[in-house]
Amino acid sequence: MAISRALGARIKRREDPRLITGTATYVDDIMLPGLLHVIFVRSPHAHAKVTAIDTEAARRAPGVAVVWTGEDVATRCGPLPIGPRIRDMKVPKRYPLVIDGVVRHVGDPVAVVVATDLAAARDAADLVEVTYEPLAAVIDLEAAMRADAPVIHPDLGTNACFRVTFGSPVDEVFASAEKTVSLRLIQQRLVPTAMETRGVVAHYKGGELTLWTSTQIPHVVKTTVAETVRLPEHQVRVITPEVGGGFGSKLDVYGEEALISALSIALGRPVKWVETRRENFMATTHGRAQVVYVDAAATRDGTITGLRVRVLADIGAYSQLLSAAVPTNTGLMSCGSYRIPHVFAEVIGVFTNCTPTGAYRGAGRPEATFLIERAVDAVARALAMDPAEVRRRNFIPPEAFPFKTPTGATYDSGNYEQALDKALQMVEYKALREEQRRLRGQGRYLGIGLSSYVEITGLGAAAALPGGLWESATVRVEPTGKVTVLTGSSPHGQGEETTFAQIVTDRLGVPVDDVVVVHGDTRAVPYGVGTFGSRNTAIGGSAVFIASDRVREKAVRIAAHLLEAAPGDVDVDGARFQVRGSPQRAVEFKDVARAAYKGAKLPPGTEPGLEVTHFFAPP
Image (cartoon, rainbow, N blue to C red; front, top):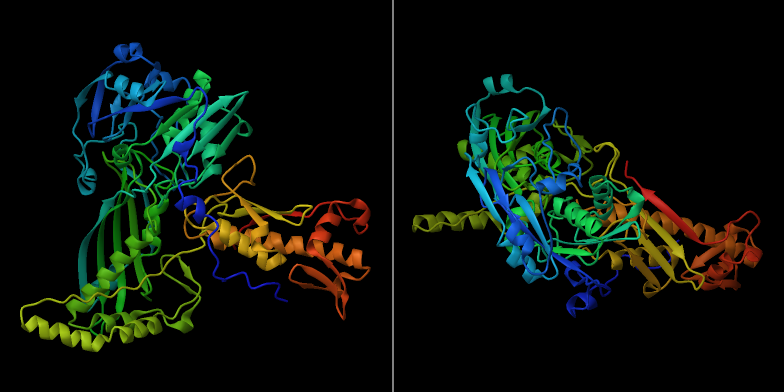
């Protein structure tokens, strides 16, 4: 039975007042007594030996608390852990500061200055003298794969970070093809550029490290920082206040988070670093950065029979949390929305002397769409066919779903031809083509582009990812009847406080204003994976939904006990429990909540309280 119509209702976002009035708290707003400020000294070279670092003048500068170089860090921090590894993946050790005397990208940090105020730290950083011996830099993907290319990490012996393949060999298909096309495509390197740059405040006090950081994954940061600075994880607390955008760039754990923590541990004072926009361009992960080779085989009627893809993915100078995951998404999704019987995709991660790359808006899937849609257009052009017709001929038909692509992706449903026809109808495609021909006769050019996009949303299936990417939620009814939701996910603009409150209202019938959503504090909320991959509502919201339903089940049992009725005879009408057929026999939700904390009013064998924690893991 429906309890409310909260889901899908048009309500005002509860987050907005504090955001638009400037009263929200971001990392840079965190001020603590005795706070110290940090400035990094970063490399101006893409590749160079550090032959000397003179910090004496900086150490003597007014207000300076400490100056660290790689030697200081090596004794206080372990190497930074990275994310999931592909088989045979080459992973160089990386520390928060360069410790081996070689910088590998512009912005690589070589020293850090800590002072009583930001101006003093900045002035002292200017006094740090670093002597470099420039080395040959490799900033071109294809050049990095040549046999004579300088090896960025000599201990690895190669610039290839990993290689993964999808599908099966297609040489015979191409050998017998009636038509083939080949493309070389460039996915340019992009900088995510969130409105709020990264920022970290660390305070080590009483044996506990509290870390405020602008991140999409607070629990992952907690685990990683604890390992890096060698603290037991239960002694680390991560708080994520408001996050001013991420777009994937904050879906990572950075050396600065570990280093600021180590500084606070060593100095016994709170330490703060907020990234400048210039640093953001050099030190925060970039996106895309691929060179893709695509070959398509087709019959004369436009049916695509084979696809061969080779992706060179620029990893940058070091492996990051998602160095392997993002480009492998490109290989996995390279078929797009088309039924292509024979596909082979190869993805190679390549080290270069550039800023490391990571997730950025779509994380590998837009790149896949670009390559397959360009290939379809190339087939249409080679056969002098309408691009819409070539797409229609090759779409996965509705009756084929669920459909498993040759690369191993399973699509649950779709009707791509119907969507295309609707789009063509809306833009009056035939008339548009006629207009294009007419204008071309006048020497004017009207471009008409078509594209089809298959997206992965609700990322988290255990079948696709080892261990899965579950999400957690606790739904707790207070004795007053108000509801507190503790969620492991941590938003950066998704509006989850509003959405999750709507879910609780829908399942429990309480007013949406009676629901408080708590997030972003690893000491307060259950362990969560994070916010990315269009998964907040699908995965985090499902955890809230199921936990709310289980709370309701217990509430019905308590209400039935109060009403001296069987639970199966109790109906829920909004926030009211009533006996079926006798609506005058009823109790309100707040009465049930109060009774839940009074043992004498509970059914035999029922524990006090009205609280459920659920970890939702999609199949």
